[in-house]
Image 1: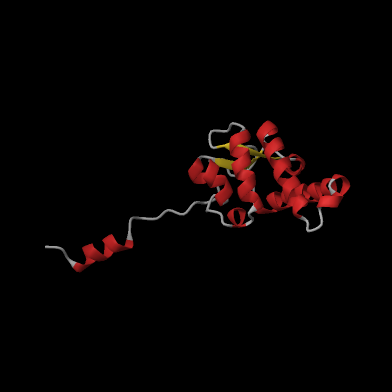
Image 2: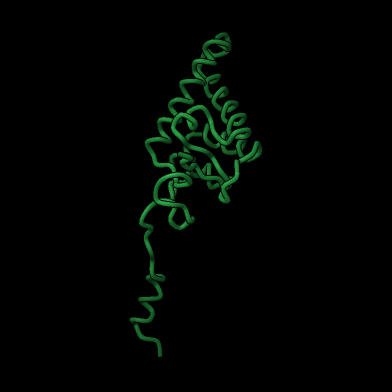
Length: 148
């Protein structure tokens, strides 16, 4: 016979384990190279990349940049080219970060293009999981890590 306690424990689910730090369940170290990049360096890297995109758009695309969409287009192109080729943008490089696949390899152009498109939509990077991977990273199987 099934008791009420058996049913209650089943409804509560299995034992849950909280991670001590972001990246623990992915096998990443707590700090140093290969650890998950935290919010502050990510934010500053994005701000630096956005500033660079604004400068480039205003220097070379002034006539088409009436509503600021060229800034976003330049940010997209820079992200695709730099993350695809080197695994990092200028902002990532200055902050000591790199976009990698889950097995530690550079992302490549295909993943960089999809990741950059989702980054430009704003919402995917804002929604992130317990390992601080945004939806844009989860969608393509990448992670932003520290390299120094």
